[in-house]
Image 1 (cartoon, helix red, strand yellow):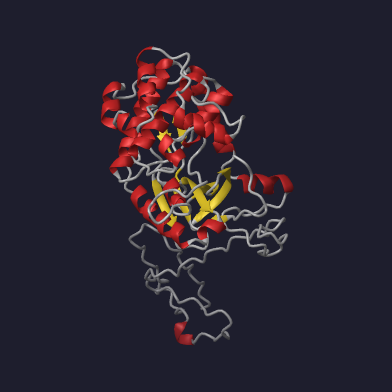
Image 2 (spheres, one colour; image 1 turned 180 degrees about the vertical axis):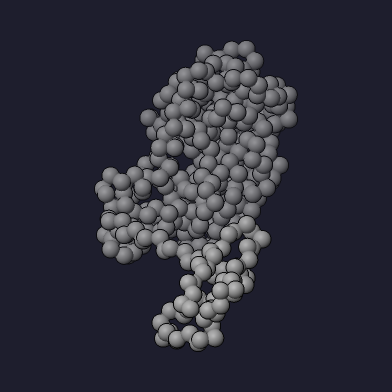
Length: 408
């Protein structure tokens, strides 16, 4: 994942962007966080495509259909805004490397049992996509993400929206326009013919051949893209190094004629049915762990940048370039913490206990002293004892008034 550039937005819809995951012909893909804390992948459409009404219409249709696809073997579509100035779609983020990264960079060609498990997961993903009325049209290794539980397919149905920009009124691709990824396209896509679900089966065979051998079955575009497209449409694939049932499975998928390819039901019967146990080599599993740690370290890149520069930016809010009090003009918190307040002392509530009999009321603070009358003075008689206060029921002994000496 790359850091955000100065020209990248910080928010798309209700999602705060954390970094850039990639960029393609349709737009940029960002790692983002929802307001409720879910990590998602947000794809923002390029402006030149957004200005085409046909693209917007097809894009809205495909997003509606993609939301019906289950999330077991694909990245679920969570949210989208097809009416925004730059349309975008948010999908669940799959924490795993792509098949391209695993084969080209981390490990190399996968063992046969891993390829068979990969075929099982991809067949299930394509079955769910086709059941929603979609054709992927761009199944390639970079659109297959590797997880511990099996592969996950992303970007399904998105390529169809691009078809609207290059199709004629009859539904055929205009001359010279190519929709798909060279090396992982079907012959009908190369010829500009109508694309059916059988095209995804051909692409599935190319992806499996790449995973098993580490090379594309029709070569690369080093000799020119037109030579590569010719080999896809007219020549046989290079499947050297494959043998047995796996060779038969991949070879059947790469049949030139769409009607001669096996259906997904037939492929499901020839695959393992379910992915059980550890389907990946140990080195790939270790890479998955490192990938998860890398994701945790890069979940909050703005906070890391603020910590490194000492700005203390508040990453919980959109960066507006306006300071929020004593700050640095970047929307961050002030460099010095505010003074701490001393806690206020709580006043005791007045007591409502009844007074003891014979106890005079407390004098009011600030009131003038008043001389006591002679009637209130104790009697000079020796036989008149001084009054003794009663003891309250709470076993609290009150003070006893001392006896005055008689002046008689």
